[in-house]
Length: 144
Image 1: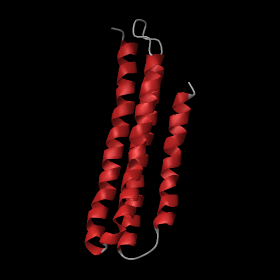
Image 2 (image 1 turned 30 degrees about the vertical axis):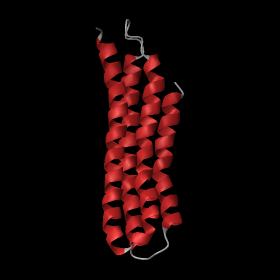
Image 3 (image 1 turned 180 degrees about the vertical axis):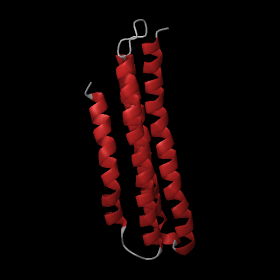
């Protein structure tokens, strides 16, 4: 098997793996805040759930990109392997970091809602900012 082929598969794996890890961390950060807020204000649990689930989208973006890009690698020749490696690392890191940071934004919003403030809409707007860069990474990776 060619080195380029291995790098291509590694890039695809990193794309999917980093996106999944980022979403797992992001949703956990927000869900931990939701658990704490539930002790203060149980009536707002649906708002906590909405915000807790927002970082999960980066994992979906990683899966979509993986599913579409896996056809770009020609295993017999390794063609496209180096490109997919670079793309997988780059987009995977964007998905990872944006999901974690989005989880932090959502956790702060959940804490505010739990304290009695009406900040759901504002938090969703702030949480959309890191999401925007994940969407750009998805679009950029699919334009190849």
